[in-house]
Length: 219
Image (cartoon, rainbow, N blue to C red):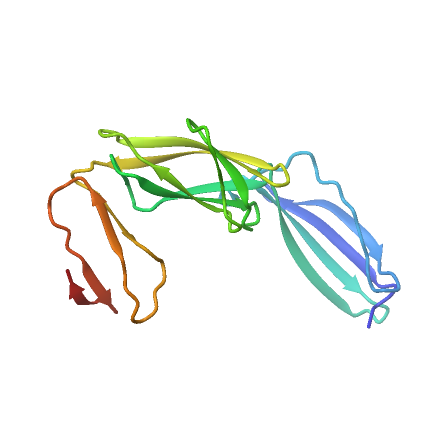
């Protein structure tokens, strides 16, 4: 049942060089056993390298009822100037020059939730829409002889929040490197696997199918 009239002590803390108390608030629960508070954070907090430059705020609440019984709870929240994050991952370790490569672009919120967004890529007139998972597939064709490819990716979600990220990828040469793709990511037993190899060399491509670390088919 609701605990009315309980004392609530809330500490609001952050960590920069060392843990620091921002505020200590005293509240009482209402008839429904609830206590609400509002607190305006400082205009700037020190970000932490292990949190990608974001700051963290801890809220530690201790409730004491009329019988002097106590319960405590702790929440950690991220404080950021970058509400959206962009991550770009190529389908292989290095792009293959002269071939259309796939780069998977993920957009998420600062707390890790998928963020459907519209993407704008430097040097391209069209925009790309991510799916509900915040994922889009970007075709990239490095020119022959390129050693690296760099792109500026900008994202805007439905709430108008924006982010931009410059990404760079290394390139292998077409004659020395190739791409391997399957038509699906997951298969059921008895289904056929369609495999595509893309590259500029003339050497044959050998494919081994392994199960539990053992080769079962060689083609």
